[in-house]
Length: 260
Image (cartoon, rainbow, N blue to C red; front, side, top):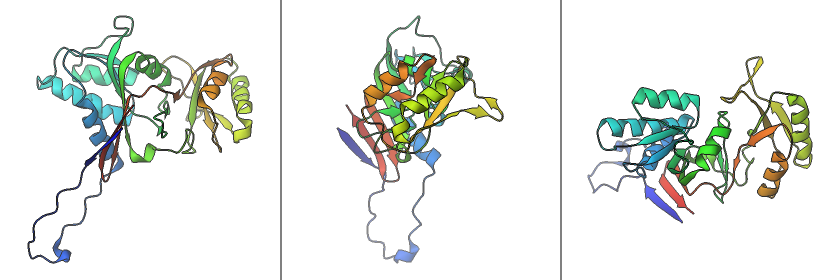
């Protein structure tokens, strides 16, 4: 189900001004669209909830808003479970009480961004490198609200041409990368080690990330998921299948809410 909420202002009454007198339309930046989606998602948060706190530029806005509402006393008794060290630091700076899945194995609500969203609300996540912890927390939640701007909508996962991340152990990563590339050879897959400068990017868990670049649709996502996870050396991949319960999309025309 999709609910469209217009961001356009209602037409003004006749003023006698010529069209040339009208102010130019406001063009929102991508970050402003992300903030709109994030603030809309925080409307789902209620006092007393255990919250999964996402990672990334869009989720950051949501965490900021939760901290603001706590300071204002509009939210109380919130417990946050961060999905990365970076989000942990942000939440601590905002005074959000934190815990973990060992203490709270069931999460009421998680809010996070996504790198891609397909028409069936399947996601690609992890281009920020936090895919394992994100999947652990968001897989334990009753409701998972995804916040994106319209640039993240794709016809199929991998459709943006950008990275499909796979977290792998550092041991013999080249061997694992070659097996991943061979797995999707028919899709024109190229597997690349993610780096920071000249050094491998290291996740919060001490692992590496192999980014898969796909030229074609990989087909059945669950089959692809199983095939990736069967490879020894793979820790987790960035496809989040059948996990999102709500997707909030911000665009120039307004906010669209899609529910499963």
